[in-house]
Amino acid sequence: MKKLLNRNLLFIHLQKNNNIMKHFTLSAIILFLVSSCAVSQNKIIYPQKDNKGWYITIDNKKHYAIKQTSPLVLSKIKIEKGKKGLMLNTGNDINGMLTYGFIDMKNQFPYPVFFKHTTPIKNGKVIIPISNLSGKYDMINWQKRGYGIMGIRIANEKGELLHDMRIGFIYKNKMFYPATYLTEIPSVNNVTDHSATIRFVSNKNTQATLKINNKIYKSNGIIHEIKINNLQANTKYNYTVICGIDTLNYYFTTFASKDNPRTFKFAYASDSRAGQGGGERNLYGTNAYIMKKLMAVAAQNKVNFIQFSGDLINGYSGSYDELKLEYSNWKSAIAPFRAYIPVFTTMGNHEVYNAIFPINDTTKLFINYMDTQGRTGETIFQEEFVNPQNGPDRENGFYPGTSKPLPSYKETAYYYIYGNTAIIVLNSNYLYNPELPQNKNFAGNVHAYIMDKQLAWLQKTIQNFEQDNSIKNIFISLHTPFFPNGGHSTNDMWYKGSNDPRPIFPNKKYNKGIIERRDQLLDILVNQSTKVKAILTGDEHNYCRLKITPNTPIYPKNWNKPKLKLIRTIWQINNGAAGAPYYAKEHLPWTKNVLKFSTENAVIIFEINPNKNKIHIVVINPDTLNKIDEFDI
Image 1 (cartoon, rainbow, N blue to C red):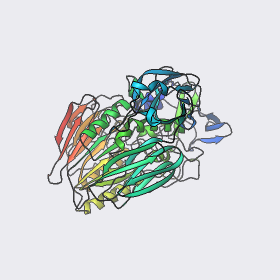
Image 2: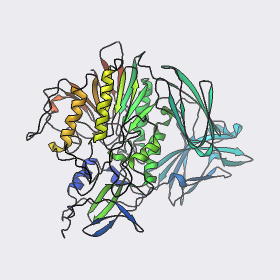
Image 3: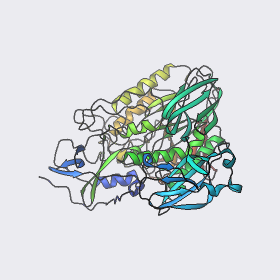
Image 4: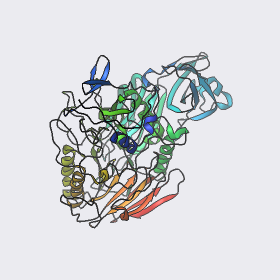
């Protein structure tokens, strides 16, 4: 029986309610995993469950997963009546600090205006002292109206921010009562030239009303998703959502049709997981500070939509409650803007759902798994977001160790159209297993690999758009660069020039390695298409503009397989600078073709005029508002 290799490994200390692991970059995790274990068995190892919990078996020994927890479980937070204000019970024994203030919903982009005082949370309980906000502090006129909306912020005893949430109250007979209200205000989603979906969440199972286009829609439940059809293209629609004490008025504009294209703008960014520097740069899992500013710049530039491609949150968690908390924080950070502007999202590697197995004092394995409720990283993402469902079929096969089919691509790989332009969104972290490719005893997909069904769907979708004379431009967006330039040369579609990484499944052999699969993608996007203008990527926490021409070197020196000959130029525009910790520039075979590189936070604004044979692009630092780059393609 072979033992695990004895090496000095990085020990990641995972305390209860501690997300230190989340601050490690993927490169650090891979460096850790490279030093990980060599296992004697040839059979695939996968997480299993018994009455003691999740485990994996190595050398006939069971290794049980760490019990992952969340500092807050949103479903356990309770709000109760009180004389001076509402009583908040976090459902745990946290000691920390509560910040609170009113939200004036008459503002176009309403955020809380926090009061000058805070109040301590003791053993998970605190009175929100609404009565302190009377007289000259009554900015929403609650004393006269008898109700109001507040924003509260929960921090732990170290001052680290855990959660921002919206609450509603009723004041009656000198007592404050919890109201019926929206915990998640409306967002406009899946806008097309003839439809849109409005999503909002109430604090209890109740009936809500949506008024739009002279029609009334009723919705019952907690999560409300209402699709509106038969809309006119390129038309502004006012809409009203009524739920309990909330009566909220917003508007959105439908997309231009293919038959009547218009000049439009869209914004692009990715990688908003938590940054350094304290405060809102880490609102438990997300850089709320930069995301708010990024959305403000997008709104000021009057974009028609936003594409955000992965690593929204820290993730790398096997706790459903923790992922729900982080997604909630991301959405609350940008909520006022999403009521007007559709935001299309997809998964990055940090959206993975994984169990963590200690092997010895210095070795832990991170393994993608499906929990007992059938939840995966993909299904949790689908719960949280509303995206198009026109993507590929699920990959063939079953989830390792189960009889359940592999996850759906629904809402994580898809396309949408604005006027003469199509945006195709790929999921380059489908079934991603962080333990691969370093340890071939585990099943799953490697970071950045586009699997067979998605590849076939992409090719067919490109062919359809090539034959559609009304489509003039195509953008491809995915989390991982084809050509890394700063921070991810050890993976993405390069892996230090190694073609070996590929998915591993017991019942299927993947003959194409990562670089060969990259070439298949390039062949589809460049040689089989005249309309794909740029690949929009993230993962590397920087802004980088790379021009790939037929003469650009794209292979390692020892490459002994066929080389793809590109027949035209394509741009790779990377923007993983939405708040995650930066990566500096690296030297790679194509580095001379990097025309601009910056570690500043960035949002990219694309302007497409159907009457001009060019696309104008401006890159702005949302924190300082300076222009980072400007060019045409």
